[in-house]
Each structure stands twice: as structure tokens, then as C-alpha cells.
Length: 119
Image (cartoon, rainbow, N blue to C red; front, side, top):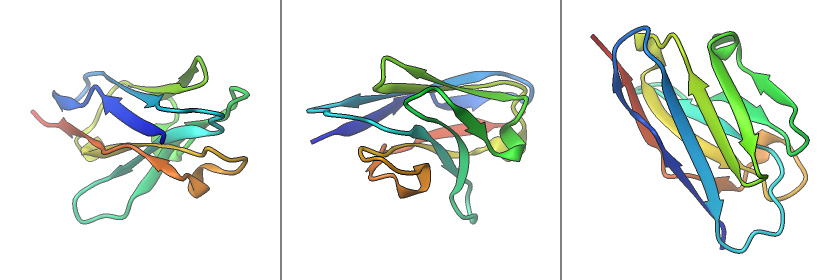
């Protein structure tokens, strides 16, 4: 069974940076696309960014220019977040698809890590 484990959340001030990491563990045959979603209180979960196993990265509009998603050794994905804003406050979830397919068909999810941006 494959698990995703996130790390790196926390409380930071506006304008600060934070790096989230996610590692897959278990019996892994293949991990396709990996990425990050977030869910703020009272809001629906939304896609932040993803990267394919070929290294192609895509970002939601709010993440462009501030966030960078990276893939490492095929089973790890990180999210570097710069210039954080209070509206970035949310639980961030790592997601992955163990089959060929898109990020919105992910079958693997992390437990979530809280990111709070506040002065």
C-alpha cells in the first residue's frame, strides 16, 4: 500500500516563504502525476500545482510567479511558496496518481498540512 506523507507546514508572516514536501512510501510500482491541493476554511478544495513524471509543471493562476512545484526521484514532490499572503492560509494536501491520468483523478492523498499566514 502506498502512502503519501507531507511535511513543512506552519505559521508564517505575510511575505515569508515556506517549503512543503511530500514523499511516497510503500510498494511503489509507478507514480504518475504528483501535485498539491489546498482547502481553506469554508471553501472548496482547489488545485495549487502539479508536475508530471516527465517534469512538466502547471500552476493555478494564484500560484504563478510565487510557488514552484518540483519532482524529485520520481516519488517525492515539493512546493516552494514565496511571498505568502493571508489568503494562502489553508490545509495543503499532497496528491498523486498511481495510474496514467490527470491530477484530478488522483487516487493517493496525504493527510494534509496546515499553512497559516498571519501577522
